[in-house]
Image (cartoon, rainbow, N blue to C red; front, side, top):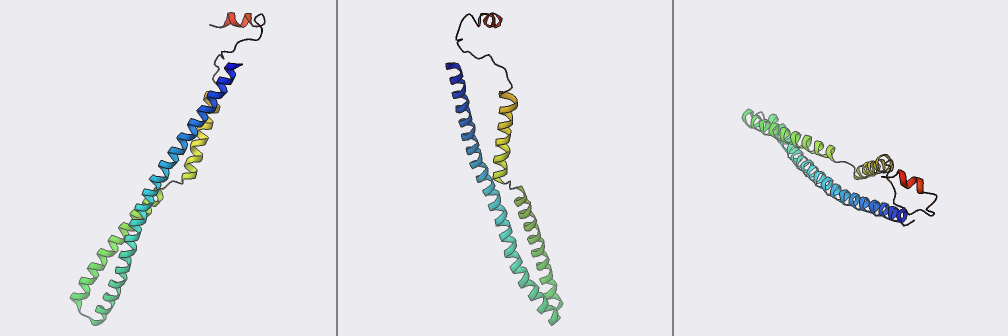
Length: 148
């Protein structure tokens, strides 16, 4: 009977070890996702700041075009084009970074499912001889002779 108790105790300890490892991995995933999300939000913030200046340049360009002074509005259109390209590039990079962030709950669920699948399909299917002392020697004599 002591063999079964040790077996179940070891199973419980293994389950606690797996759960502790999963919690540590979840913490790492949360910090990694936070760093990625923070970087993406910073890029999107810079893009919004550039959009503010783009609006100012659009207004400036409209005023200059109405004044019909070609060299001034031509220069402002070049600057406007550069700002638009920079804002578009930063916005595209920020949205791509946000797409990389994985939901930590889904990650935890997937890992727990993988562990449960491993427990069911690998560990519980293995047939290992259990070292348990028999109750009556005469009932199990045939079994002991067959064991290596």
